[in-house]
Structure formats: C-alpha cells, structure tokens
Length: 126
Image (tube, rainbow, N blue to C red; front, side, top):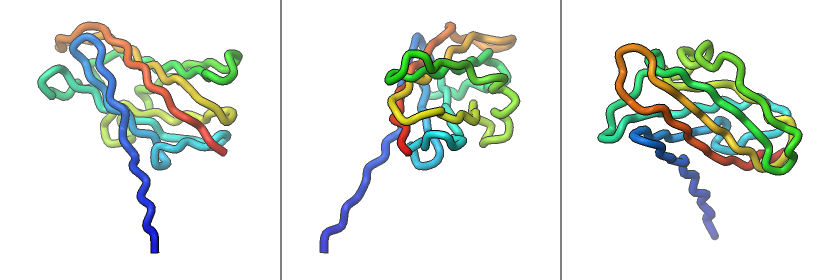
C-alpha cells in the first residue's frame, strides 16, 4: 500500500521591514468561478504583528495567463475583521490559470513601518 502526502506550504514574502504569509481557502488551491478567501498575516522584522487598523492595505489581482484580467479587490478592510482579524478578502478568479496577487500597504496613525508591496502567485484550477 502506497501513501501519498501532499505538502502545502504558505508563501512568505518580505518588503522593506514587513513580511507577509499568505493562505488561500480552500487548501491553497483556488477554483475558477468560485469564491476563495485569501488572508495575509503581516509582521514587522522581529515578528511584531502589524494591526490592520493601522495599515492602508490594497490588493490587486492580475492574471499571468491572460493580460486582460486585472482587478483591485474592493474595500478589503470591510472583510478583514470577519476572518480571524487578519487582512483577508474574498476573490473570485474568473478563469483557470496563474495569478499574481499584490498587496501594498502604507502606515496609518500610531504605527511605524515603511510602505511595502508584497507579491504572491497562485495557480487557479477548475
């Protein structure tokens, strides 16, 4: 009997003094035409969590397979508080292919970090 295990790793990216770890539901395998929840845990160098109420965050999504597909996730902060208190948003990828997810952020009041841009990629199946 052969047992096959599938390793799923969350991607980690860094920019300036900020690091981000991404997770996409379901199981880091988004499906075209269905809603996927994407969350990104942000930390400063040293591991201190960046509170999302203190960050102006924006997520842009673009297809690497079809240059005509590009959109910004509308008002991600409205969804952040509903999913583990992390910057999360619901995204429906329109078709199968490889996508780039770019999270950019700048400081709001009371925080101290440089503006950042984190770019992740994911494959969307059917």
